[in-house]
Image (cartoon, rainbow, N blue to C red; front, side, top):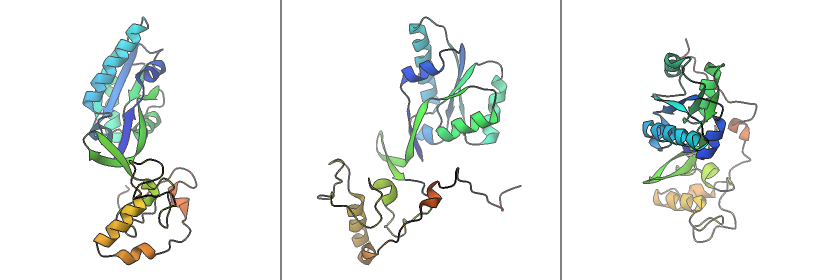
Length: 222
């Protein structure tokens, strides 16, 4: 899922300083799961924005809503029912949601309420870690399902660097060396020979070369 975390409240307060009525808009997708942009977070942020405005001697009205998804046109159209009742939108969906709303509502002021971080998952209660870089050319079949692009600090493709010590990455003792993890996992699943494979120079064009990436499915288009 996409992992995000709320921006500093004073930063968001500054964004909407000229607004008298703000629509705080959450998303029931990824950011809800990582507790950054769901219904509860909408309520909390709306309250904090009102308090922030009050501290500055202003009155701010908030509308609180949460869409099923902010990355889908059919759900964004629900915003139509609030037309004329707000001066700005604070979206606490990921950056994709903010972009979608800005594209579909060209006359609205749309501000991000979260910082979009990475593609990841929950490793323990309240902790999320990056697992995928969205590079567009997955090699997990070669690395026992563990991603060196996202999880190696240098995105190395042919084993660990010289800074790997006792299975830990040189950037911090709490960060595992993913290549050590790949090596250990290949041994556990009976494929130790795969570790000796030499990866060729990687074509990174699928990772963002040539502008925004686009996928089109002929079987799904109308």
